[in-house]
Amino acid sequence: ARNQSNGYYSSSDSDDYYPGAASRSDHDAFALTTGQKQFFLKLKDCAPLTTGFDIEGSINNKHCYCPCGKDLKKWREDNRDVEMLFDDVDWKRSPCRIFEPMGLMQHLEVEGEGCILHYGTRMYLEKLYENYNGPGIGHRCLYKMGDQKYRKADAQQTRNLQKAIDVGQRELARERERNHRMETELKTLEKVSKDLCKQKEMLEEWRSVMEVEKKSKKTISDLELASFRLLFGAYISLEKGKRVKEKLGKLVIDGVEQGVVYITVRASPPSSKTSFSLQKFFDGYYDKDKGLEALAMKPCGNKKAQKKEARDAAKKVKDTRRLLFGGGDDDDKDGFIAHAMLSTWRITLKENTDQSAENTATDEGGPLKQFKSDCWKQLNNLSIPVGKTMIRLFEDAEGGIKPVTDELLEYQITRAIKSNKATAAAAAKQLDGAFTRAKAYTRAVGRIMFNTFQDFDKHSVPRSTMLPIFQNLMLRGCIPGDDNYERDDILKHIVPFTPNPEKNVIKDRIGMKIDEEDDNSQLWTPDSIFKKLIPDTFIHSRSLILSGLEDGLSLGGKKTSSKLEEGSGLAVALRA
Image (tube, rainbow, N blue to C red; front, side, top):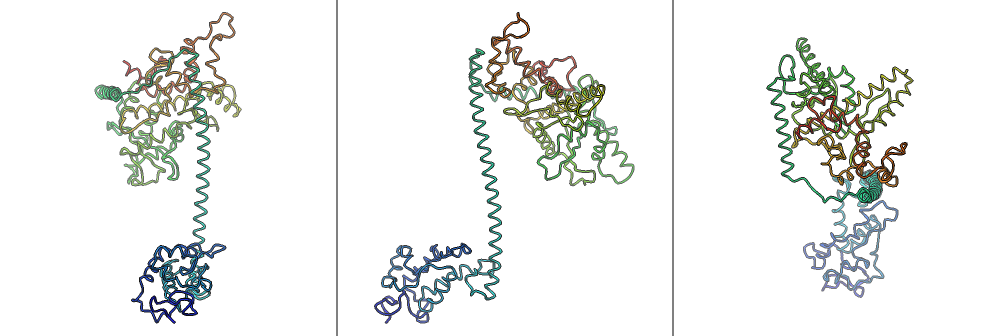
């Protein structure tokens, strides 16, 4: 008989073996006991009940526990009113155990005929998973196997599962790639750490051998930096004013004076990492690519306008070529190059001649900034073509890039020429042409730097493009051995160039003959190493590339009589 005090049958009252064992029709939905209400409220926190539904498809999918079973006693014990419902249950006879999702639904359906807790749990699951596979498509385990709803849900669930597998595989591949990248970076960091330790040890050894006192760390104050900017700004303003007053180097297009240089750049495809190719940009203008004139033209409606636009485009391309590659001061007697270096640059990026005006990046400040930024990104790979061989002008160093030595450059050019099987006369001409191109390319780099220096706030030149030892040379006219170049700084600045510390050429030279073939030769001393060996090894050995950069950093170019160690024209002007 039913126990009227709690509304449930106990094992002593009836043959029923679960709580709430009365027909659902006997229970008023609005007359639930406190324990029954708490039971249903707690279902949302019963993870063991729903786990199997969420991982459905695994090999062993018995992950759904009936909340009325013995296994979930601890879950029910949090609320005494709930657990009291199960005080008299005969657990030995209880069918409540662990099921597969579909098995659980069948169990709840059967037992729900006589138990409101089972019935309510089934209703809860049906509501919870009614849109599991999309609007109106529930979890397949809610339906009878084989019926139409089941087949529809099963098909959708299989598709969803495959999508999840695909996503998981892509994520796994990305994670593996990320782990591989991190492992590579870690190895690189370990190597860098070891290299830095070796460099630090070598620097300390150099200080000891060369009798150099370690300099306390010194930084440039905000006042000193502001003073330099004011000085440079005053110099630029003075030069601009002088050229306007003397009417030197006017930029004229179709009879109209301009204060602007129009530079057309062939843009890279959208998929490229940079907006343009620095290599193709230099090669195109240096080799007088006729396609640049067509690229520089604006779309016109009639023949007369087209002729005018063609003349303007040809003038723009010619001006850009001269700005980039025009020779030194002797080649700028009309002052055009200096005027162009001081003028506003307008960059136009176009992929092809058919590109419409609205799809063309014409400079309003942004393209110029992008142009310069992409120049510095690609500078380490800038090369000169010799036949079909590309020969780099810079090589990677610790903390940045450095110009290749004259010796290495000549060797690589000569080897490339020999592979072309040219005659002696043709080979000599090609060698001279390659050297001329190399200096022209680096002169152009210097001029882009000069224009960048004119606006500190909007544009910048990364430190990696000019290592400290070259900064001192080109911007201060200061080389190792000069009194105003502290020796401790010199040792720090040549560390990025040093070969294997075990083959330490500077340390090994101390006490050796300067001229090994002369028995009466003087010996290398710390003083002679700073004044001769270091400048020769690190500066004069790279004279071709460095002189090109200095030329570009001089308004209109350096005089041919100028010495490398004097620095750029910019250094001379600021030092005066």
